[in-house]
Image (cartoon, rainbow, N blue to C red; front, side):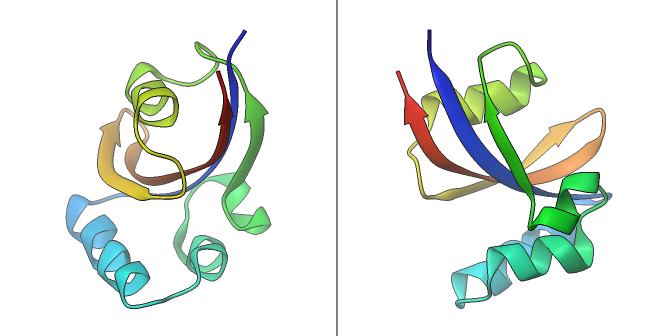
Length: 93
């Protein structure tokens, strides 16, 4: 059974997510941005969601974590919670 570890930053608007993604592209620290901006309780842990399996997160989130390249920031990804920047730390297929 596949499993993965990911971290994310959750914000209200696509514009805010894109602004944060630009900061990351310039070398900003993901964990620090998550602590400062993420609306998810995981923000306190630098956005770390720990390990999870397919189906434990919303579908759009799973699509990124289990199908896109690891160690790359993807997004903004829209879910019912807002807009996410998602980085898969590792994936065990």
